[in-house]
Length: 401
Ligand code: NIG
Ligand code: FE
Image 1 (spheres, rainbow, N blue to C red):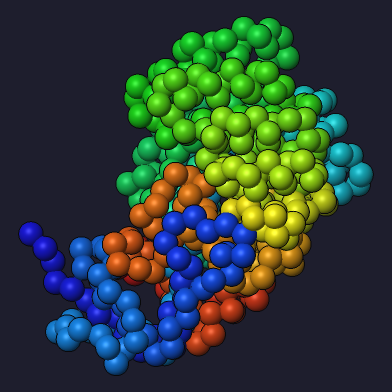
Image 2 (cartoon, rainbow, N blue to C red):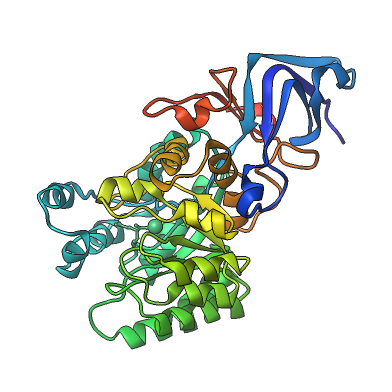
């Protein structure tokens, strides 16, 4: 049975990128419709256009003369964790590097100890307000990773917590193979491929597998083994690569047809060229640049080379305590030199592509009716505002949250 259609009117500007992934200069091609209307039925957009051309519909909602943009998609978060990293933060601001804290057994490993000790219920309770914050900032779909599991049981508890929260939020779950144990890493990688990945695939606990490919984490060969096992079990692949050192992860991910490579702060010309020549989305995480004081990912050069760039918060306790998807978009403009239009595309259709989705991110017939009304009549406030929510209301499936 089909429900009644609703026509949203009094939209100062309806602004959208094209449907599907946008590369290079096409990231700047937004459609801006002044005095627009938006027709929604059964959670799906039926029609968009000028108010004057809208089909007659008994159920009309006046949006108050403000701008409407697609709901944001946050393609990279670690929103499930226990414990905190406040001591690391204090040490870091006094000059101890992030990688050194990790090498000493702190950092990610301290989050693993705390998270490994938490129950599914505790993890759900801890993650809920973080996801609520991302949503209030404009995120209508959010990717969430595991990766703080000390053992496979803890990894699965993290994924189960994400599954519980899927009743409240649109989440995309990813299994993250984050840091190796200090002993028998070969045995660990084998067990991930032989036991964990098949189990996670069988139970439908994740749609993709991610690996942290880095000097202090997994080598390129270990990463290849994990990503190949993921593919063999029907899971998509992604990578954390080039955060501190470009050791070959980006090239590997592009070769294997990964959905995305994320971070890229240390990427050079070879990695930019590999991404530009592939279908793999380059996901930049400017919150990490802000919080760790790293170089910014080369967002401008990636787009100029023709890559598809997405942006996310990387919300996590150690490298990016950024609880706003809109802030990540706004920081991509300041730190990675995207234009506001490119940043909107990066945070919508390209972020959807980075998590393997095509049914959202644009305001066009057939797309999910996930959209934001802003406080402003000019959509550019979305990229301009720092430290407050420019989104007045967040709609998912045509309903205000
Ligand atoms: O995306 N770099 C590796 N992983 C996370 C950080 C996790 C943490 O510090 O707890 C990241 O930055
Ligand atoms: Fe991350």
